[in-house]
Image (tube, rainbow, N blue to C red; front, top):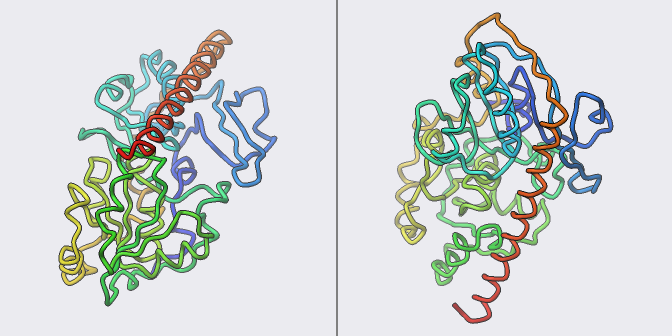
Amino acid sequence: MYSKNDLYITSNDFASFSNIIYSDRQEYSKEFFNNNIEIIEYSEEKQFKHITYKRLSFEITSGDVIFCNTNQIDNLFYHLSKLQKIEDIILITHQTDRLISKKYYQKKPPCVKKWLTVNVGFNNPNLHPIPIGIASDFSLKNLIFSDFQEFKKNNFKKDDVSLYVNYQNNTNYSERSHIAEMFVNNDWVNFDEPNLNKKEYMAKLANSTFVLCPWGNGIDTHRLWETLYLGSIPITKSHPTFNFDEELPILFVNDYDEITYDLLNNYLDSFEFKNYNFDILTKNYWRKYINDMKSNHSYSETVNEKFYVTAYFKSKRVTLNKLSSMRKKIVTYFYKAKRRLGL
């Protein structure tokens, strides 16, 4: 039996496993407004009261574990690339949907020995996928730590086959829009619109044998981890970012048209708890996983960001945010036009 405090992992837990938090998204607090911090963005909106920041100076020792909001990784790489004697850094990135591709991985400075991240785009022995987990406590529209009760792994072994389908198309229209029509005439499939309150939504997840978890803005999704923590079996497409998940009760397919009643029934019939490592759902597992990578060193350096570096990366962020906003609008208009044309 696992204690509740050791379950329901979030991005902020991964930040807590590090020696240095370079950039993080946390619950909004005025304490972050100080001379050593640059505020990237913040919101005092009740449902998503948060702040994203980065440090303007920090001390780093060879062998340290450093956490970074993935959107600020270019800024961090700028600093790390200038440290000629620092080595064996363990990097953790999280909190965004950015895919870490082979091209992007090649930008990492030589001092980074291991890189742990969500949304891994390819296989590399020094690039390690980690879970997106559940949403942080400040994201009240999502399921958060306080919404969950005791974890009961026996819930995975249900008597009847059922598949639950409930998601927003607009988070990944090309991936999601065609899926539902594959299952409309099956009485073992239950559909809902994505407008349930949290209590209703949790009950539907917990009472379903299988839950469809298609890729969204990123490959990994909160829904997949919500499903596991509630004792149901997620179904999603195979991807390198799920390599460690093969030890969990997740049904991977190459395409969603492979999903049939017989496939699900056979999976359920062959379900054995001994085949899975439920420790992967715990914070202690990931804390140890990271600590086992660390090496002890004594050499340290201090990083102090110059004002012109701060100005450059701020300007770059503004430009990229504008381009991203334009792209989202174009994609939205494109798919609205397709729907109107019946395509």
